[in-house]
Length: 231
Image (tube, rainbow, N blue to C red; front, side, top):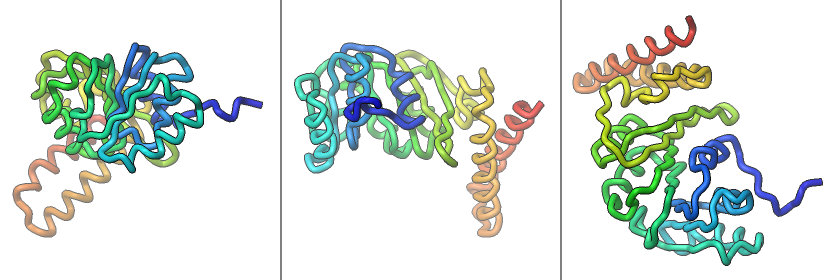
């Protein structure tokens, strides 16, 4: 039998850990239960972890898990708003399980605290807005993955300091995903096309002229991606 104290991750967080790679210290903004940090430490992917959340009660679950596993001497807990809680140099920063708009705001407000850290981001929604903000705040996307966990698909983005300018298609689909066209993109593309078409139907029914053209463009882009993937 395996060690009951050994942390196992779901497919989403497993890919996040994979894209972080190895480093001396990583930060997890909005660390929630702290499982990712525990996994990183147990598997020698980092020497130290900086686990942050918006309030002390929010950190309670992570504190409890890290304490139970005996990892306290390798973890620093910080209460703070987004990246403003980072108070030491880190080589990688994870922001996962939030809306893309929220992650984008964290990047804008805490850009100086993030320094030269590699970012690994998993937006639940609004990935196009996040990609645009990455470009605006001085980051280039270096990797993107789609992970299916049960019936849900997650997009995970890795970015590093650099210059990049993304067109509409790249913002909607992702520059690396467009380049690689991985098989894992297929179910996500189908889902995004359904969402775009449903939103377009609503905009047409309500006469929301400001949304019709952008939604038509988005649907057309996903249809093109699907056609490429199904060849």
